[in-house]
Length: 289
Ligand code: FAD
Image (cartoon, rainbow, N blue to C red; front, side, top):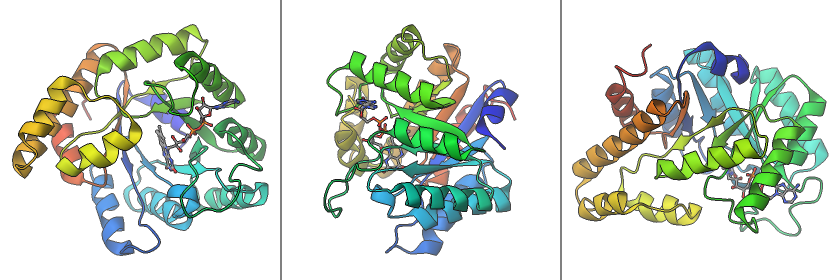
């Protein structure tokens, strides 16, 4: 099903992101972890695309498998860094044949192993959006950054560029993680003022392991509010405590978003079914089946 339809069908949607196995990792165990998340029957699931296309076959295999085995609509991520027009058309054909109808169109970043100029046939995600639009038949989404994309010269420039991506054919946007909802509300206001009218879906990252603080937050450049920093410092060496506190922090972020009228919530599951199950249980009276 097209995501544009899924987003309209329910008063509140809850969706989860999973990642596929890397080429050199154990396919079955990572696939099983992603399938365990699908078993929770979210409204849809997104499947990420490894740096520079390194997981392209596995991304499609997991997206197709989740739809077939669990009846959950999927959106496959696709990046254009290092891609040629021909490789993108092949990817689109494979997706179409696999029955995947939704694509998160991304520029991607140049991976360390990639030689030469990586942006030749496509410079920005908006170029990829145009290509997918030309191919036809897909519902297209894009990424956005409430705290600004690291390459952008400023937040207003970034929003202007985002408007170009939406005008090229994005039907919805999913945000980079953020840990302070006021940053998201401010971003929404700026996007609306710039004429961006498509749904903007907040991406929530539950911080439930000490290693995430380094790996995820520092790499993304997102700001960590004092209250969350206190939690990650205090419970860094206590697995159970950090899991519980991280789930509660993410649940509170979501409750506040819904209380402020946000109707679509996306959770970065990191293939951890236990974490998303706990969050979903915390919301059981708020997001009804
Ligand atoms: P763009 O929209 O092209 O923006 C990149 C930069 O270029 C921004 O600074 C923007 O302001 C600027 N820009 C855009 N258009 C123009 C223009 N016309 N003129 C001048 N400047 C312009 N990466 C992966 O490798 N795989 C994934 O699966 C993946 N999933 C993601 C999911 C989400 C929800 C998010 C938020 C990010 C994801 N990423 C993923 C990371 C993403 O690939 C990087 O953040 C990348 O640096 C930017 O991709 P983009 O599609 O946002 O790029």
